[in-house]
Length: 103
Length: 433
Ligand SMILES: Cc1cc2nc3c(=O)[nH]c(=O)nc-3n(C[C@H](O)[C@H](O)[C@H](O)COP(=O)(O)OP(=O)(O)OC[C@H]3O[C@@H](n4cnc5c(N)ncnc54)[C@H](O)[C@@H]3O)c2cc1C
Image (cartoon, rainbow over all chains, first blue to last red; front, top):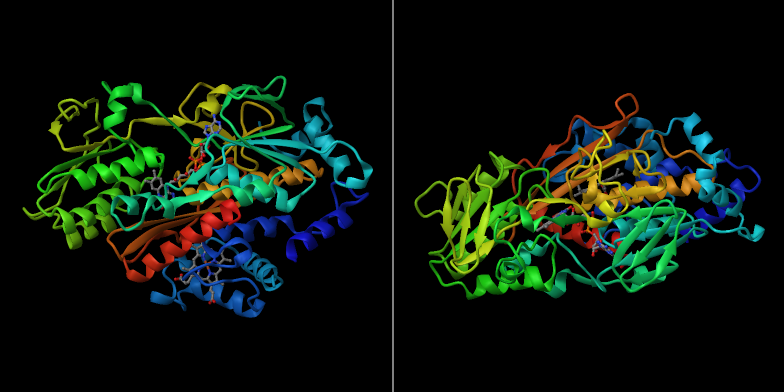
């Protein structure tokens, strides 16, 4: 289970290395959690909004870029074009990595 | 206060950061030092989310969550209850899973906060010590700013701006009891207020019901603002399309610059500067400010430190700018975010993330990104939204709305389905359902 993995990484990574080691990318963790009010906790959605947990990273990043550029539009992007424009390419990569690891 | 790196390190080393130091040591539980104690007041969208995520991200933190009510009743979707599309039980949830997620869940009402001694007192006579105190109390309604809106009047006139059986439930019953041809008078508070599109959505939802059940009736909207304060184009389009707005058959009579100044529950009248309106059902939302607990903690202060309606915070942690170790979430804060459940949920996570970083001797994210989306129902099967991404600007110490945000192209059935899914997900994410 992801949560306990994160916790043990956190503990292992920071033991004896206060204020430096970042076993968990906590910035990405927060940014990803932020998507949860629509996509569900850990990207596991109930109802019509698609789940994004476990999406292939390359697919994820391409969708985010397509939302931003308008290549994915109309009924295929009711809202995501407005969210995707607020993030950088680097953040797309990190978010893609994050969600791809969630089982 | 501000969190530049120097201040942060200084604070960590100073006596004022006892909790922080304890946290550093306690990150290895085997060491057996004290665990950082966080008290969260209010298990609404902000407080519940904050408590839950703090435990997910650092189980070593001891989290006490104090909430006045024993059930969670959601304001989002409460307007659909007025429409008869949902029942109170559809927007009422148990705290059972949240109780399991935190160390100590207390159903009690907070009556005192001592920020010097770092303790919180409840009506039930309990006290709780904290290293960090998180206030997610929502809003306080200021009935005394509307003449005649006393305890007696409040039995007849409902605001339904805090959802519950005695508010939303009663207002629905009043609408059901209203005769065909009756008048429903509702108000919009002056901005900023909880849920900018909420009153206009309410007009849509009540109109949906009246259109079916009492088509000769009328809704009078008394707006304290000079114009529709949120998603104007989309609401006007919906009112025209579904409720005859702009024709002599309109179910909706919209009156800007008409802030209710007085109510008379015996004569069933609402007075504004310009109008005296007689109605069968009156729904006045009084002016509001940050929750009472924010006043108790001395954090209901603006950027300049002066007493004000909302609480100025540091966007990187949601710590009060004026009182150390006290954090404020959601509707109580002075921000440029809309006061929404989506934002409250996000501020809860931002604060949890920052506290987790600090008690582990690390610096919180210095460039946080946070988003808002407000869906509104416009009829029984259609909805639309407004969405914005905000990014922290260190120079201005502010949150800047990123380009590209905006509203739906038009209302749609697809967005109604997404709105329902949003609600399921935000409830589950907040309460651990
Ligand atoms: C009609 C309506 C429709 C809305 N629709 C939407 C929507 O569609 N989407 C959206 O995003 N937002 C919506 N909102 C806005 C949303 O409800 C608020 O923004 C959100 O509830 C704010 O969360 P909060 O945590 O700040 O406060 P709240 O959710 O109000 O939580 C505050 C909690 O603190 C507790 N509390 C207060 N004082 C004490 C005390 N002294 N001791 C113990 N506990 C205390 C309260 O009991 C409460 O549980 C709507 C609001 C309304 C009124």
